[in-house]
Amino acid sequence: QGQLVESGGGLVQPGGSLRLSCVTSGITFPIYTINWYRQAPGGQRELVASITGSRITNYMDSVKGRFTIGRDNVKKEAHLQMNSLKSEDTAVYYCNAEYGDRAPLWGQGTQVTVSS
Image (cartoon, rainbow, N blue to C red; front, top):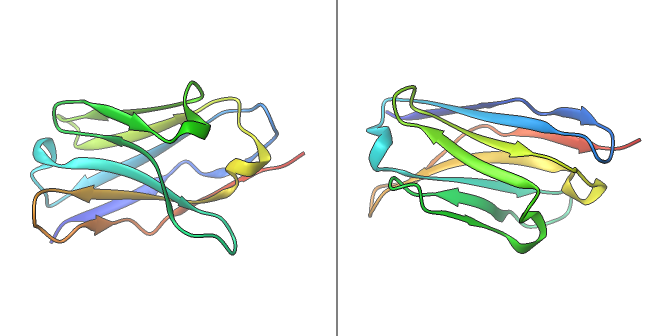
């Protein structure tokens, strides 16, 4: 069974940076699209960024120019570099892996809190 484990969350001041990592195991990593979702308290889970196996990326409008998604197919890891963080970026961030009609995989989430 595939597993995803996120890390890198924490408390950061507005304008600061964090780098989230998603370490995978048990999947053929290069073929999967990797997505980062987030869910703020009382809010719905929303798609923040995605990267396909061929490294096509997509971002939600509010993070464009601030966040960068990447992947390392050798290490079977993905990351989300978050710069110029704002209070509205506060949420639990989840890594997700999907491919075709296979059941999507989810990590346990990592908390990101942006506050002074």
